[in-house]
Image 1 (tube, rainbow, N blue to C red):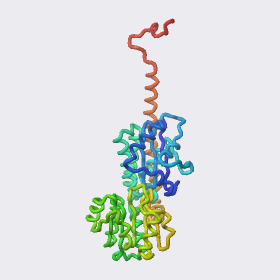
Image 2: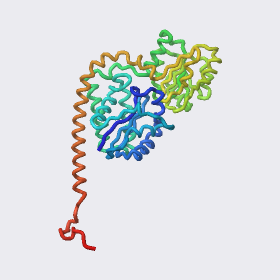
Image 3: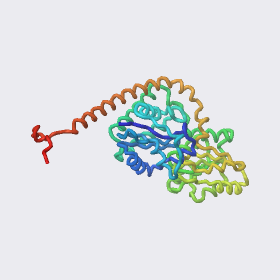
Length: 365
């Protein structure tokens, strides 16, 4: 039995590559079933976040090309070989334990990834895509993460990407946000986090736009903002200072031409664009326009990393905890694999209960 983890992350691929592999929530189960079938896998779990797309699985095929499964995520053929990593057995266990605890994140120790891993696992488990191996693996990951956060400072005082975006806005306007106007495109969890952080920072003029007007109205009402019909958001952008795109849409919502026409309507007044979405919602070409400042999720890494030095001093303890859990799980999995293999060997030749040595022999033709 091969246990593996394969994928790409912010460490191996820029956002331009990661967005090609990103999986929409509504498509995860169907894609997982397709990959499971084509890859001849016994179990599978897909993880798709802003910073990583990964496949965790098991297979009895010793010669299967696991890396070839990742290009199946792309709508068009892509050569991803240079960006894909592959871990097997103990290395795969170690990798998931590090990821779930936030040790492999863009921001060391960030806690959001734990919830994302839990959601990915629960989605796979409820769809019947996991089995005894992945169930044990993911439970071990959550157990390890809990121990790490209990015994160390990892996860405390981390700066999220959303917080980094708001800090970026503060710096851009010298902390004077009370008279600034911000439009947030999106009404999901990420967008709501941004809106709440903006309110805490004293922003009074917040517009929320979403393809679902009901969700935009709900979020705006809860946060004291104004809802904008998605079809009119470009019109409203003429008067705002900042636009934050925070959606799960796989499409470009603001094209280069959209932004160019917008700047003409604004008479070239400066505009700060922050794209937190993967795939990106704002055309990167917009950054070439005069008086446009555009940041994507990778650009926020340096700001979000501030204050990580204290957490880095805890890494030795984290590694000790992880290695202990890796060894314990691998021992259990190996023992279970050996037991099943022995059982299969014994079941290959099981004579009838009342068979004799004579009638077990082949008869002459």
